[in-house]
Amino acid sequence: MELIATALRELERLHDITILYACETGSRAWGFPSPDSDYDIRFLYRHSKDWYLHLGDRKDSIESMDGDLDMTGWDLRKSLKLLKRSNTALIERFQSPMQYMGEADFKQEFHHLAEQYYSAKAVYFHHFNQAVRFNEEIDGKSSFKLKSYFYLLRSLLSCNWILNDARMLPMHIEGLMIYLSDSDRAMIRRLIKQKAELNESYLHPADPDERSLITRLFGAVSGKGDLLTVNKEDYKKLDQFFIKQLNATDSR
Image (spheres, one colour):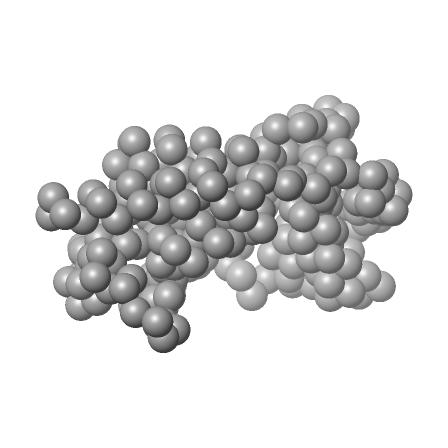
């Protein structure tokens, strides 16, 4: 989308940065957008090498709203520190099916690092806590935003994936559904089609079959996070990657 590429290039100019990777997150990338969904654009960027040679703390993120474009960027050093902790949002960005900027080599190397630093336990608890929070928004309600149901469902499907598969979990909801029955997948696909035709303000009536899926998923994933492993990789590979990227600024 040229409008997004233009907006990202303007951020590069305004902040004197190089955007290394930019993608879509949120409902459009997750596979259940509404007609009026915003574009949730997330990017990683790098300053010149001299920018990092300071003892004091410096702002390591950029936020910008431009109409329907919600853009947030994280500095490379911040991103690598978050990767050490297996930050779920960061890992997810490199699974996005919608990329706006970035070189293939950078994406491939960063994705490989994400696989090496992936901690199933950390990602599980992120999604489980999200599921509890979203469940509070809809449980017992006669109607609610369909968006809230999908956020809850996606978090539970993510937990279910983690308990069934050692690989990094996919971002798109279709990939997360592989451990469900055919009937459950069909029901979710009908809801996705419905959401694609309705604005975000739509209030969805509570349905016993849809609630049953949530209850069954909670039963399948609750209380199992402590059985998962924690990644204990040190900073060595991240340091090497960071230095490589800073040295690349010399050729700019």
